[in-house]
Length: 167
Image (cartoon, rainbow, N blue to C red; front, side, top):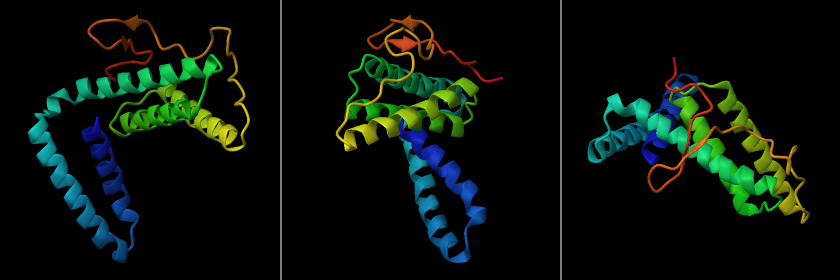
């Protein structure tokens, strides 16, 4: 996961290079050079093959959906706490990394936006010392359809509610 998060950051940084002024460009190039060097050494050390990128990206999105589902279940049960806000924030970040690496899906984008909004709402409620407002549909079984749970292996995974692999 960390490799692909750094990879997405490097891609964003390379995209932003064109908009930097000369003073910032030198330090950005130095930083990106170090980051790309670390990515290459990590790729070799971890045995990451570019042919496996789709599989790895699928695992990243599955992880994001799993974190989102756990946070959403706690939130809809009315038991949200600071860890729930952190879980929403984490899920949204992993969804954004997936988008940066090429996973484009409207439902995933909606879920990322929802997770960011819920993070803000939960954090504001805790900061103000009040109970958070329950999300729409809490308690009635509605919410995001994350597909069916598969219980293969030690970790449950979720079938993708989005098209995978991308066309």
